[in-house]
Length: 190
Image (cartoon, rainbow, N blue to C red):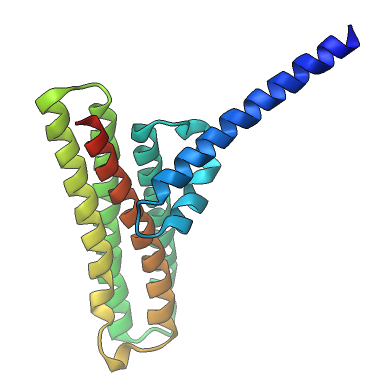
């Protein structure tokens, strides 16, 4: 009786391992198509159980990762803006950047809602909602890139610019990956 139980447990464990490996391979192969594949794989692998092998869930999870990074960047910029040693131009650039990040957050949130709708519709309605999602994510990426515009010029060089750039680059990279995965999802549905 004990050997049958051990065999059953081994089969269950093996099946779970195989399912996880298949999901990990799905994420890895999907991430191979994006601009930042290592970041894609690293940021989405913790959600393998949720993603499974679903292009829709993969795209929504990538957007959720982008949303979370944007929220972290927003919190960081809010703290940085209250720093006493800022030059007026730095404070202004951070304020402008905060507006862009806020717009980006709004656009990514809208994209997630559009993708949820895409799961429920077909044909032209799917195409319309998918186009909306793609437009919102693309606009979010533009907002993130625009954020750094206020830090142009030699007078703005220094630790503040470097730290803001690190935050915004992190957000922009995961958003770029999310856009690629949304576009891949759109192609698979047609």
